[in-house]
Image (cartoon, rainbow, N blue to C red; front, side, top):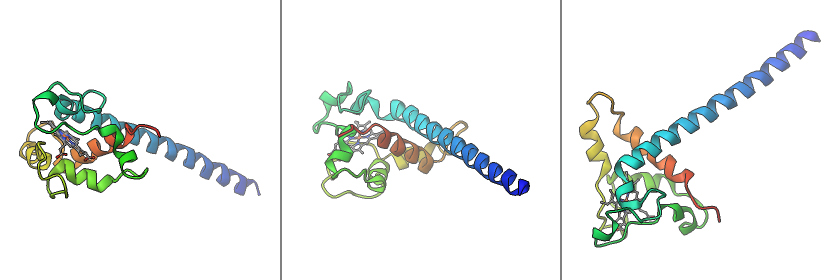
Length: 137
Ligand code: HEC
């Protein structure tokens, strides 16, 4: 009986610990995405993602407000579509005029340099960051 109680507590503790670890991992990924964003996206999309970066006025097409992606998509954040838009690997319908660098190609060039993560990993992190800054509706 006592043994069962102990293992129940053990399982509970593991669950709590695991949740804590998962939470920390999530925060780390979002923080990495934010760094990446500030480095590569802020100039056009603005510090808060609303499309008001200092380069915005120089572009033919205004940079999108990235905090409204979820509300533009019926309340669902289209994670992989956004991933592909950012990477530039796949053409996205209606975005042929995109004046945005194709980050997958750009990041691939840095991939083997010290201090740089894999291109996919960096785009994943930035996509998670974008998901985290969606305006609440
Ligand atoms: C040189 C300026 C510029 C930079 C730098 C830039 N973007 Fe963009 N971005 C744009 C413009 C302009 C559009 C709108 C293009 C269009 O609609 O054809 C856009 C559109 C987007 C879209 C599509 C939004 C939607 O809902 O249609 C996403 C997502 C996006 N950018 C994310 C990013 C991320 C993430 C980065 C950095 C890794 C970045 N952008 C860097 C100019 C830029």
